[in-house]
Length: 343
Image (cartoon, rainbow, N blue to C red; front, side, top):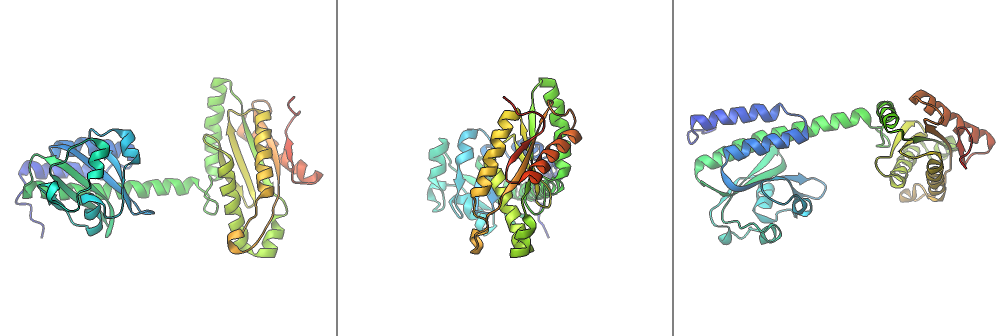
């Protein structure tokens, strides 16, 4: 049974309010703002930080920190087990250190990078479902007693729930707009994004273009190498598209072996150059190489531009699609354009 005797009635009520505020928030940015305000009020200290675990590397990165330079925080990462925070994440146990100079785990590297002098520290892990999500560390707190540590662990429990909630919510949002095979956006996102882009482009009197591309003779790839390898080819094509375009441009899995690339602020001439770049890169790439195979593929492209060719999403997609199928009829592996070629 949990022992709350070291906490005052005010602290217990504050924890309840904190729990309500954190677990009700699903927006990551607003969650961090809530954590910043609430924790600063509940745990008086010179400094405190929220560090989250990168599951891919096992490193801790500073997600939120009081009074530390944001540019430093972006590059500051703790290796697995490094520092007191790293040990707390590893052992999944809170730690109180009254004199960091006498602690063998204390990492001086952080202080050297931030210029902050740490004398004492309290640190608690964020644990959800047995997994470590991160840690909260309080540096040079006013009090190092049992009550303050208990308060910190309660806060860490609430923050862990809130962080996991926002992660799962974000994953659900991502799945709703992401193609499960390629990882590119899906048509649901495409239609929403095009409406927004048309409104913005109309207001700014700026063009944008669409590329419609279809892999030539993809059925032959599937018949020769199987459906699993066919799906792998689509994934590799998607990765190649991501390499060829940069934000705000984006790729979409339109269905099967068809893709759309949206090119904000690009006129028809610029879109043709980009389409040719993607076509050339695609034809020069060896697919399924990591499976011991050497597969070469090509694609046919169609380009349409707003507002030159059409003023609505349906018209733009139809014209780009028509230009692509015209290339298919004329021999494939080329770029077609809706309307006259730009001079």
